[in-house]
Structures are given as C-alpha cells and as structure tokens.
Image (cartoon, rainbow, N blue to C red; front, side, top):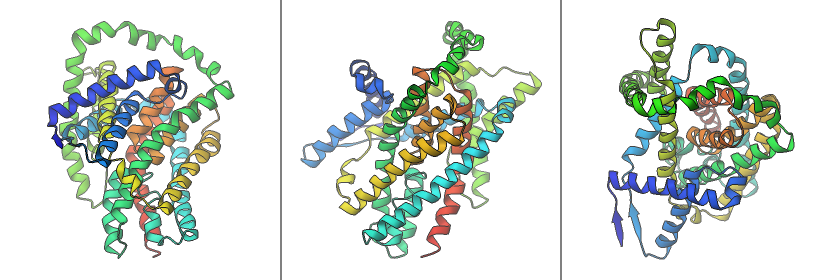
Length: 397
C-alpha cells in the first residue's frame, strides 16, 4: 500500500514528529545525556519504522517535501541577519583557522576513502563516492558528482554517493553532541562560561519574549521573506559565474546586507530577537522533514566494503573533531561547541551542524563565536572548496 502525503500533510507530520522527539527526549535519559536534537530523534524513529514497513512490503509513503527547502533557506536567512560587521571582525581569525581545518578534513576524507578502498579492491572513483563528496558535500554534492563519476564508467556511483550521504546525515547528527558534551564535562569547560547566563543582553531577550509574541514576530517574518525573495536574484547572478553555490547563499548575503545597513544608518529596525526565534523553528522543521524522509533501506543495499568505508569515515570524523578541531580552535568551551558543529557538516550538512551546536548551548551556555564561525564557513566557503578538492582528486583517475 502506498500513501501519498501532500505539502500540508507532510508539514503536519514533521511537526508531530518534532513534538514526539521532544516527548521522547524528556523521558529517555540517553538522549538528554548525549544532547541528541529532538528533530533527529522523532524523524529517525519514524524513518526506521517506515523502512521496516518498506522491507516487508507493508507500506510506502510518498512525501511532498516542497517546504523542506523553504525552511532551510529561511533558517540561513536568519543566519545572515546575525552577520553584523562587529562580530565578523571579532571572528576573523577563527573563521580562517576553522576553514583551514575543514579543508584538511576534506583531504583526509578522500585519502581515507582511497586508501581503504584500495585494500578492499574497490575502484578508486567509487571509493571517492564515500569520501568528501557525500560527507562534507552532503546530498547536494552526491547528486552532482555521482552522475559525473557514473559517466566516467563507474556503475553505481550515484546510488553509493546518495546512500553515503544518508549515512553521514544520521551519523553526523548522532556523534556531534556526545563528543562536545564529553569535552565540556571532562575538561570542566562549563565554569569558564557560566557568566554568559547572566549576560544582560540574554536577560533582555528573555524578558522581551512577550513583546516578541505581541508585535515583533510578524515584522521579523516579513524581513525574512523579503531577504529570501531578493536572495533568489543574487543566487541567479552567482550561477552565471559557472560556480556552484548552495541555494541559500543569496538570501543569506541579502540578509547580512540588510542587517549591516540597519546597523550603520539606523533608518529602520531589524527585529533580530524575533528573527532568531523564527530561525530556530525553521531549523527544527527542516531537520524533522529531512530525517523523516530518509530511505534507510538504501543503506542495506551497500556491500560490506562500502559499510567498512563509511565506518572509516565515522572514525575519522570522531578523531579529527576531538583531537584536531578542539585543539586548534582554542581548547575552550567555544571550541567544544564547534566540534559538535564540525561533526554536523563534516558528515552531513550545515543545518545539522547548527542543530548539534544548538543542542549543546541549550544545555550549557551560549556560544556566539561558534554560531558565527561555523555557519559562515559552512555557507560561504565549504561547498566551493570541497568542489575544487574533489575535482582535483577525480582528475587523477
């Protein structure tokens, strides 16, 4: 039996799974202990049940995921509104260091894929389909480079890349929180940022919640939609350069321009607190929809060598985030939060990175630096850099 869900029904299901994830997280200590995001819990449990039904031929669900991209772009638009010049200047050094570290991670992912693949007698180009193409690149790069490699005579390249991206999406969401939590508690990093909970700006945000509900929400939403609309024009211009950029880059750049114009001129108000709240909701919706539509049965179609290759990528990500990113980003609380973020887009996508970090700061304390560095690197640089490195590796074969 096949069930077809339209756009509204798919959104309603994602919302229900989001509440279900929160319900499960409150009652199962494991999820609280390891800071697993609620949308991941609800969406993944649902996708497991759907996969079981699919395998036995009981049920197949066809989703309309039109709004999934909308919520992703809406979320990154709110990230753009966060990009004021002052914090950008403060984060300049950290942005560069983090970018260099992620570039090293990309190279390591591809070297590991080729090395393990050679030991398992897997064709080099097929091995690359478990490297940075699906790991850092996610489903977007998997869908772009998979057919390219297939056209070079490698059968199954696209399916392996997509399945690997699916694995990465789940694994990256699962390991980020636990790694950061262990670092924070083992090294007692929380004490150094306890004062952030008493920050007057944060208190103002909490005390202004009623105002946000009463008057600012609609204006914040309008500003997000305007930036998204203008962003489509910017994205179109960027496409003319022949380079590949994520779909949300235009909206994020426009939002950043609006925010800084407001900061410098004072001619209008950006409803920043309200926009942040909308951004958090958009991220939750996106993740819930992304996880509930995962076709986990595609992982069972991978041969044993592919599973070993993916396990190798998982181990690499855990070690790299723990011993490299944490060390070179400063070995402090902010660095620990960024390790969670690195796991998110190092094996999945930038929204997963943001969800991992949000789960940590909800438990401990805010980390403005992490929420500045990770989305900027993830949105502005990483896709371009990953494409260049992948192209370099492919050119050898």
